[in-house]
Image 1 (cartoon, rainbow, N blue to C red):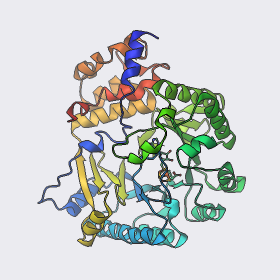
Image 2: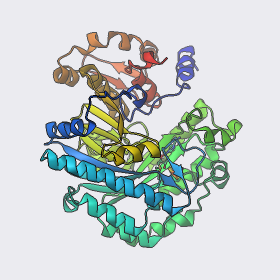
Image 3: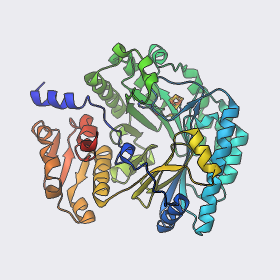
Image 4: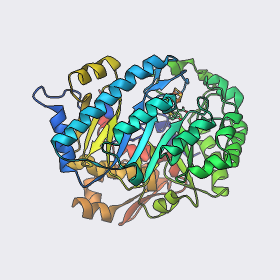
Length: 455
Ligand SMILES: C[S@@+](CC[C@H](N)C(=O)[O-])C[C@H]1O[C@@H](n2cnc3c(N)ncnc32)[C@H](O)[C@@H]1O
Ligand code: SF4
């Protein structure tokens, strides 16, 4: 291996953001001005963006047990009363949103709906129906492009799949992570295959016309080329329409349960990349195409066409069609993106959530208004992650800049990548080569000017 490549590899060991948002949430402002009426601020933002299409996201943070790798915002409980209490406040939050829509006489055009978590499969049928009845105040379920839910296969039976379908859900995403039993034990998530088999009968599959997604993780303790090959082959047998193959994100500072995974069994950066490459090789041979940094879609999935046309988008749900640009969230930690240039995030703590809602205030505690520079960098980072290329001409036209001058320092910082032929730089575009794709998150981070602002 060349010295350049060793340096690049060393750099890619550093913690990296997933760039679900840019800038990362840690740089958003959490000091809302005292004179700011957040309900009105929200209402005005929706008003200013009334013609846009929206995703509505609902966060159910509850899970029965803690998977050791997980970095999602979750609350572990087995007590359904805890879920019900949260649920009542969630409905209160949606009521406040509805009142704001009424006051401003503007209802956002919701084209996509997603139930996420934690584990939305924790909700029983009664609560699910009450939630949907509330949403029907402003969501026309018959007109949704996509209505999706994250499924923990350990927690539901076939009847719930039929139930979800009867309530308008047309896409389902399964938390699979890994099929190998010894790895499953090390991550405290034992999930025999029959749990998936019984939820994925032909009859059930046919109901979800927008497809089936599997979440897998690469970099879990005990994974090696032999057992991961078996996992990928099993995945191919299940034949999901889309696969999200995440690299394990490690941040024990915020998720101390991760320290319970055997550290000496965690694959290092080189092994992680080898595991990913192995998976890629098998998936490409079996009619999947790569859809950005960590996703694969079947050749005949409608998202494959969008990827080929450079039209897909990327958000906290993974890779999605580029049909909506705005998001409204509900529930603890949920984020909103309005006007394509303003982010909000709800609080994480239940007591703050309840306190704000009891005062009839939206539980938003963080926000960030994207400057023009943020918007350009956000676009570049997303294009790198999704399409492995930046079209300089279109960036220049859209933002009235000269790319090569504007990003002179960033381009210089990529010299090692050019030398190693991991990126090609032409007058029209910056293109990541096939060998460079495994480094695209690192390449994206070179355009993140907030990284210099870390303490
Ligand atoms: C909300 S969960 C999926 C639904 C359900 N709770 C379940 O686990 O089946 C979201 C997904 O995030 C991914 N995930 C969570 N923590 C991760 C981490 N530290 N690194 C990479 N992916 C992670 C997992 O693949 C997981 O399926
Ligand atoms: S992976 Fe899913 S079930 Fe496990 S803790 Fe995270 S959100 Fe909960």
